[in-house]
Image (cartoon, rainbow, N blue to C red; front, side, top):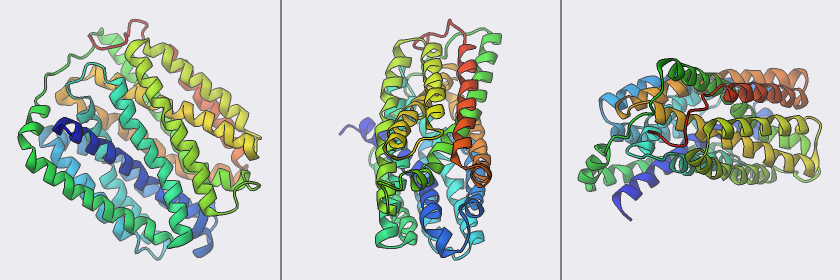
Length: 394
């Protein structure tokens, strides 16, 4: 395997781990801690909020450090830091201790998106497919969080989900350190690859696109977090006739996320070859349709529609990243991705107590109705993108 390919593999594995670690608690809370700690689901999940706040607010300083110091060095800190934090989180005995552990995970998880995505698009003209491949790894991390955590809950207890995952990440981090030392010249050549020009837009058009990116990032973050965080609990309530254990709920969640992840390949190809505006609008209107269908469904029908709406949710992920990659010069790109993801994950932090409140008051039917409205706003914003925004950068 060429050093550039191995580097891309490490970046993809990093994206997998990033989302995996951030969603371990979602399954643990839904399927185990409610009984072990004597708290309701609505009372327990707000303790995940500090982790998601850290996930958001630390993205900008992580991007700044990467641009000013070293993107490769920041990725090494990511692998080692998130692994150690997860292992420490496994020792939590109270909700407050859990909140501190999750906050530590969030601090190191914040490194990946501003740093890893800037490394993925560096030196490339067509970025849709590479970002889509990278996104699939991230979404498989989402899928495996539910699957592996559910399995470990049933076999070795919830603490093992944190500690085993942490040790794996530390081992990968040490392997990445070996790669950097063994291929330092190739890494330097990749870092100094030819710079792809940003798309040429007027100042007003650039501001409009950036505003749309931030708005759809915020609303899309709410949609993404609500669906990925709540889906194990949704399935626990609505698949009672076909899922009667944590492992089965984990399997169904894994199936939905893993199938839906590949929507990013299709969308990545489309945005590389067709109008971003058209692709974005189509993805958003599909979300509206499937969230509306999901409001009252249960059983097998709910499982099928869940696959459909997650296809649309995951399919949206590469679009904003492609837009940022096209608009921003390479030397500023980590900071630009940092700004985008501080918006994303700040909204995700507010989504956690939002899910708890909606679920305790009205249940998941109202949540899906609200998500349909949110997706409608994304559709309207996508239509406001300039028609002149082409399929690839100038």
